[in-house]
Image 1 (tube, rainbow, N blue to C red):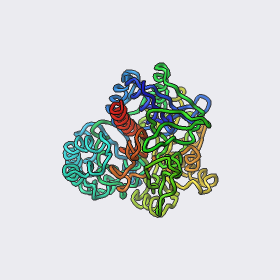
Image 2: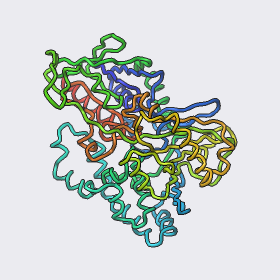
Image 3: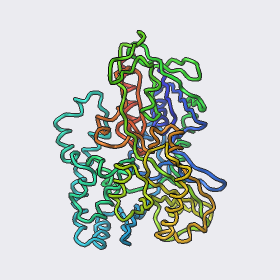
Length: 502
């Protein structure tokens, strides 16, 4: 029986373990924390529980399809479709509801922005032709060689997807209103990127929202690792929590195993599921080259790997809260925007400045799942994009910014919020870095052009046999279903190599 190790029990590592064990591979998963799940987890206090990281479920068929491939029936998950998909609150006083039906959405846009409903329909019609091609070319395959990516068909598709423009500029080809441009480009914030920096290929995100809906997992996204790990334990997968992997064993041009807690363990293959830039720290020093001459290899490996230069995604200030009331006529997912989202995000991404009038997102699961909080109460999650700078004095900054956001939310959508609060906890980029997120960023590597597609670390990242990677910093990118798809690509490559090696 072939043996594989997985370093890191985030959603990518758990997905890989599910797929590998289904294929008869003996899997050992190493996780340094006390439990698996990584950033897909819960924040808990007494009777209150809310997702710690991801909350928005996009591409539900991709998620359930990968689980089914791993032998986990989709009936084990209860996905709830959000209706409205989300609401976007503008400083002008307008509130745009994102709706699932094309005619309904066009009518809502036309009501608020006369003459723009047809622009939405043109966007959806054009993207309905491009999305399946983009999904096949850029989400469902990895690129071991750059030449495979730069094929004429791919280059033509990239042009049609306006990769040469930013997401904000690409959307601006359809809409005139600044508010609508914001509404159909802010999705880059889901993966830690600025709309004016993220390539136009990411128009697939706002398209997917309206085409396939926005969902939530009943009970919270944090249930997903619980469901997968329970299945893995039933299969006999060896899950070793509180176990630190210190290095990888590289011999010749192959990864032969790892060292954990000072003990060598040999495997046919290893998949790394930490934040990708940290993988370099597990490689033998002689394997890495700097900007100058290669360091001595000590005769262990014939391969040299150039050190990476990585840019983290944006950071987040997260507020977890519980309130002794519920709000009617509200949405699960809501965005509250400042006077100018574009200027606000330029301050953040170009000048790395904090704004006291930021954009922010609110997750209110009890609006759809009445069991998300005790009767008559709510749990709330606020996400405020901030610079990925873990060295700032977040202890002084975070409380003031949180107070400002809660006051704004009370005025614009949650009357009586502050007086009804029963619990509040903050999480900053400094916390993110302590938990292993590169540079304090919350979404892996930034989705800029130089870190997208073939330029992003691939599921087989180095010219080393037996070494693979998955996670938000690895192609095809961030977001739970996309990370799961990346793990799937890595497993398929691993099985190909295992089968070829007998």
